[in-house]
Length: 164
Image (tube, rainbow, N blue to C red; front, side, top):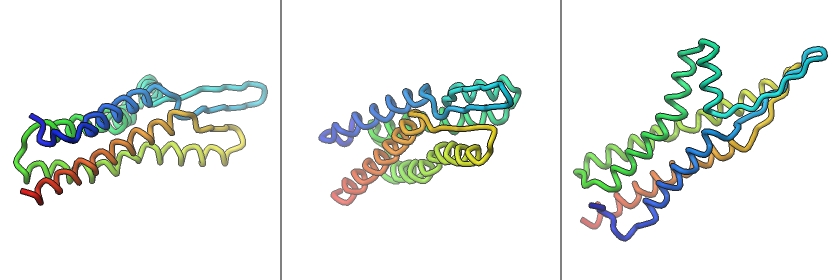
């Protein structure tokens, strides 16, 4: 039973965050172009293709780390936010979950930062060129939308708690 029945925008925000997030996983984050003598390579990398590429190259630890922080963590965060919204929890427990979702949500932007740093570093080198693609912007939007939704739910919970 929803404890905030008049705020239908929250489930809509959660579902929108989830939809944008799922789309962002498949869109290219960056395009890497390499030139060596007469050979020219060009590849687009999304979160999913990056994880697959790391796994194929036997970089298992990096693949698992990227999978956890880029796929599992944001998805679990949205599920936890849905549970906080839909399930009656004791006030202290709900506040703890919302606090941790907000704290951990800040780390979600780490993926976007890593891509940005990689683009800057590779642009310095003369043999390779990296361009940001639409996926990095959609991914950042999904993470920001998720963070804003968490802050809004936290605001509503605190407002409701003050009234009680």
